[in-house]
Amino acid sequence: MSYIGTAPTIGNFQVCDAISTVNGQASYTMLVGGVNATPQSANHMLVSLNGILQKAGSSFTVSGSTITFASNLVTGDVIDFIQILGNVLDLGVPSDATVSLAKLTATGTKDATTFLRGDNSFATPDSGLTLIKETNASNVSAVTFVDGTNSVVFDSTYKVYFCTFTNILLASDEELFLRILSGGSTQSGSTSYWTGLYGTYGSPTSPNAFNDRYENALWGSPGDVESTIPVSGYVYFYNVGQSSAYPMAMGQMFMQRSNGNHYAMNFSGYYKTAISNFDGFTLTNNGGGNISSGNFKLYGVK
Image (cartoon, rainbow, N blue to C red; front, side, top):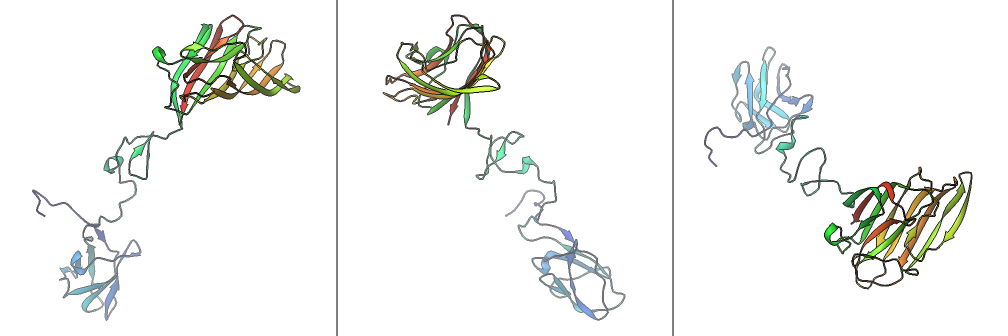
């Protein structure tokens, strides 16, 4: 193949370690950095003896890492240098810290936030969660996640959805309720849900187990919350985007009541009617007041 201009340099060019001649000896081992060096052939070398370049094949031959001169060297002969020009199409081993990201042929964005995959492409680590929407409540009666105009959908994109609620503050003696939405409407019939709860309550030094049941909400925090202590927790939603399915949820929460007792509980439940349009949910202040503050994040789970 011809080139316009200077042909590209190919090979791992190395200069062998100095060799001391031995009187009456023709063969010597070639080393680079104390390690045996093996040229591809004698034609890939420049050898200077006593200031004269030697002709490959007649003045010297090569076998492995051994160079053999045509005649024995004697005391006073000097091997000035042995230059190994490199092997055909062999770039050799790059020196440390010499290959930059720009030299890689991998596809994708190369930066501090990505990693190189086995298919030679850069990708961002996948946590398995996709943030769909985040809401910071401030004196609202309810926080609603629903499809349509709010651009938050419960559909077959994800089989499971995950919501975190943190630092939720309510007025004293009020209660946070979780209900589903169907067709954009809150489902709050007096016997629409079945929920089982299990956890601990009581003073911090004397917890007890309890079970409870809510028939008008998927989940509800025990009433009489302490207005200065936030309610926090999370909930998973199942059977989303399926026809004739029973919406289900499970999660955990922690709160403190105004009498000083704390509640740490697990909850799980379902909507007792099979529906085909489970499209959202709402967290409301069942005590009639507002949700003073709090952060809500909705994720899709792959």
